[in-house]
Length: 250
Ligand code: PEP
View 1 (cartoon, helix red, strand yellow):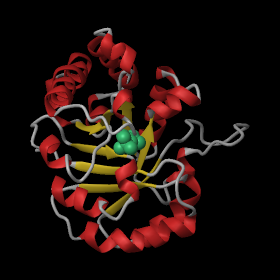
View 2 (tube, helix red, strand yellow):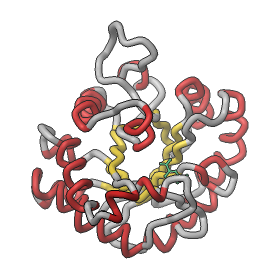
View 3 (cartoon, protein in one colour):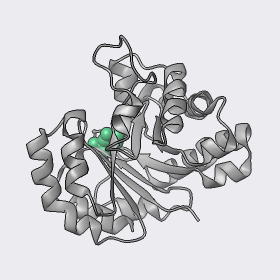
């Protein structure tokens, strides 16, 4: 039985003060929801304040990115061991990082291994562009991304990972994939790719989220699909109605 997981990716929004004020608004409502893991992923500078604000609740904290080395001449980067005092999760390979900051499958694979070595749960993002979707390349592209991300992982390591299937054309656009589309790729492509490299047991344990314009209105329908184990939520995680979204997912 896979516990659903809803994560809010705040992207580059909210100062530390704004983040804490928002957490104070939603904390009680989120904490009252049972049957679902909840993760807030603020911008890096707000992470310590958000971690302090959710202490003693069931709400987890995640980073939006990290580097794979523990220290060194990597200007502007954050190491896994810098996150572990505050975070339990880290988003890796988000399509915005791949598109704007040159992230590669190889780099994402290194980051996943580093996160796991430090006890952080990676939320690994995969997903195709509109062009790839229209060209009928979704299955081969997404399957390749999953296999590259998980290359060299043991079954034990892979089974604790979370994967977010986020079609790029659905992120921040208001266009959600239909439950049938999302479920077909999550079950038929993402979970199958994990099974092909690590076996069925691992594939059945890995939690796979859908991401792309998820709101409090469409979450319940998405969650009703047996292969969809939660959501990575952008825009809708910045509003007080995120509480409703999480409650509707549970
Ligand atoms: C995201 O940030 O990963 C995302 C899916 O954004 P949105 O929910 O706004 O589409």
